[in-house]
View 1 (cartoon, rainbow, N blue to C red):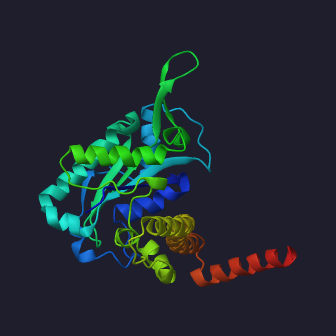
View 2 (tube, rainbow, N blue to C red; view 1 turned 180 degrees about the horizontal axis):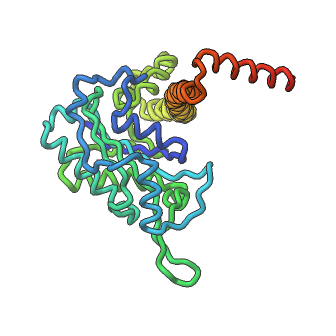
Length: 324
């Protein structure tokens, strides 16, 4: 049986450039060796961004007069990764796979009363081992202010309000997809976990898969019919996964920040090269201008140009000597 999978990651302003390049496939090279560029032309957008995520964020914030104090540490965007397993998509075929992601997109647009206007991008990747969709959105909540006026506010903590907010998301997503005609399984609801470890390793994040290799001997499934033993082992495996996932998120944020800084340095380097090129051109023009000046003055005073240059150089050298 296959599972309805939805996972969330929160991002700060500094992370947006990196996610944009990865999700929209703007990079030339990828550390994720799971990406097969030969199939990248099969990727498609359900909602395509018209610019970078950073630019769209600023535009939406201004257009809808979104409230909320934004600091460097504030989470300003969320990203759902929506998928199932490879075998499931192969069994339902291309058209039903498209309907799966379109249906999931509608779910996100309506979940927590978000609204489609606040979805920045919905990109389906077909160039990795398992089809999956990245939905990037601004966590906007609609509420009333102290005076009873309707306002819209960027508030990640309020969008994910409550300890069971993640469980509610998964429960609602599963119900929505089932009602839409997809034969999927919710899985074990205990501890809000529902993905067997071997299936989870097949999904989308290459880096997470690599980290699992380090602890593969811990993740062997126990061969037993004892439900309690299986349940305890399942909890242990999930706990291990959560630890690794947190480590991965930290690494990913560091990588995104480093990529952003590298991009800025490259931009500064490019600007310096352009400035240097401009100065060289101005220097050539200035030399030509001086040479023409010598020529005109020599004609005016009936001096040879070379004699005039020697006089001027001698005068400049005397000034420089006095100023030492």
